[in-house]
Image 1 (cartoon, each protein chain N blue to C red):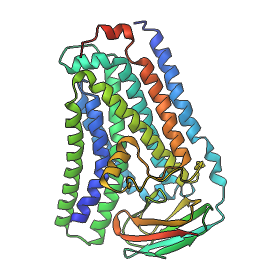
Image 2 (image 1 turned 120 degrees about the vertical axis):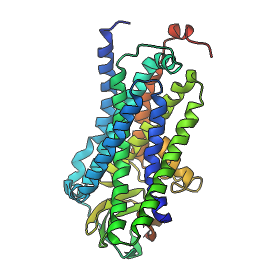
Image 3 (image 1 turned 180 degrees about the vertical axis):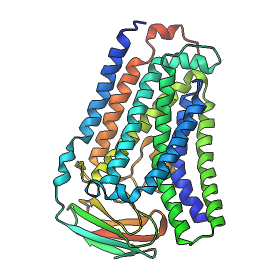
Length: 121
Length: 277
């Protein structure tokens, strides 16, 4: 086993791994992008307001999720593929869409009885 | 109590399955139990800290703190899993000899076990932080008695641990000669799935273009919130409605880790003197 060759090969391998990962994280500059469309969902006493939120289809939007309750919640939507823990009293901002027309369920993963849906039209 | 148990179980399950795979992948490595134990302990401590500073993390980086934090932990896990896979491709035969009880010198085995500890710590930290926040919330709200909460949490923890243990026991039934080939593929898919999860968080924070918000929808075949969907989500990164960037992250990881894994697997010359199976 040529001992000297091994670290060099490892370095090449690490580089081969690091490059795609770096590429994955590269577009950090889109941070400044401002979402024009914003909607608010409020969770309080185990219920969402509004329980059904209408948003325009095929358009990106920002979801402001307010946890007005007294304990942590986790906004989750398998349909929209979103999840975010929101400590009590905090507001979480989530980028969502563009959604195809249809109904998208969401819930509080820490209290799955609290459910609502987003309807994209 | 039952609701608490179910939620804790779901959080623990993902970490437990990852620990099950890591333990099986490290059979025969010296210090395996110690380092995996250390990984769990560090993960729990980290989970407590993360939960404590959850509000600060969520509010940081213009509201993207939580997503960036999760993505960073996932990427660390992916890098460690990648390193493990490649290391195993090179040392699998010595490891198999070791697992059979034949003494064998294994290259930088200690560093390898430490990488496994990092993977375990990352998994426990991520899932643990959510569990701590959930339990703390219920405890503070007084909605459930302390006894009910404790019993529920312990039941959930036991259930999750049992699932991880079952996966580990199942993997150990694989003949040693093939075990590390199987765990290699499992770890490869696990890494790809975690990379896709990381991409998902960055899309949610608007830091990564989705490249197509919904590439396809297989939720009618297998819902992601069912038991099978959840397990497959953890093990192979199943997503019912993946974004384009997630599919790309998955594919790139498969290539970046899978190709070196296959190329570095024992050369034919060394295979010939391997133990016949």
